[in-house]
View 1 (cartoon, rainbow, N blue to C red):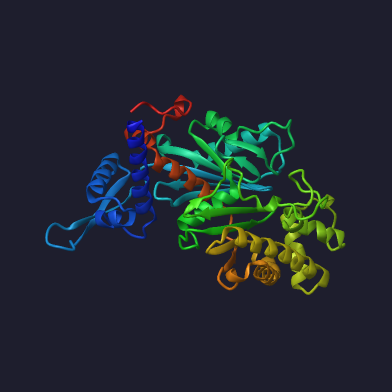
View 2: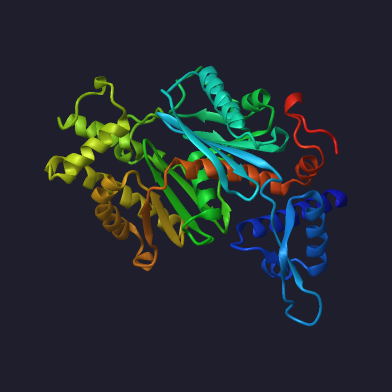
Length: 422
């Protein structure tokens, strides 16, 4: 037991050092690592020596010592130590990124597809996407690909690697899709899956607009509605990994049908497909049979509203009121420092933003009013995929075994993803 605890502590300290160096805006000294992580100088020296020997860190020069003695060596991540991949699945396309060990995107591409699809078709499509991205960079040594992260909309049990329900999947036999296991066996490296809103929250924690605040609510509004929660500096998943399903809070008993199978979910009133349905009911948009996508129709309705169509404007204002009310309730429950809303194209965001902000302010408890900022933005799917890649970097940082394997031998992609023994 003591040996196990010692190894866990070692892995935690390794993660702290790598994470601090990766997110620093410039090379750092060992003294700065110790100050940021709280680790003792002997511990920092031992860890950085090991990480330098493995190749995960490299020296980036030296700076004058703060006292009398040798110049302080500066350290940084070696970006070519390992590579990771991130995939973001959406209703009508998916995005794949190839990311280096420093967290920088080296390659990204988007592919159109048609969903929902069968379990087998989804596994086949994502497998092909990963394999195609592997071949996209001639400088990528496949043995250095440490893993793949996949951001999936819907109910995702990240602990078990299973998709319980997703709008990109056709209704099956009621059994969850063991997506992580299926992809791992096919692509030859370990694959991790996670809810897509959580992956956007992770990307924002590492690289984004929240300024590394410890408590943040990130709302995603696109074809569906999602929520990622950062609580005390950690991504909050709950007991089963299914926490923060804002879109599936029931706001009306026996209300509008939701894609998840329930009725009256918030998503069924504010997500893009719900807004398009309201536009169709009002006679402002053609029926679903015209062959266009939901996102195209959403954009067309926004253009009508922007040109002054009162019915269209009223639809977006109602969308904003409902969404703002429930964001205010999230603030009351979680007390975040700020709320980020990834709210679709700027044209539409301008239409619902005033009503979102007003309804949010009215719904918040009085002590919160005027103190919890709401930032509305649209960053594009590459950021979501980068978050999925960051999940893999996090797992690599936490594992001394994976670090040692990548350092000594790489990942044996020809042996079914099995890592050679160190």
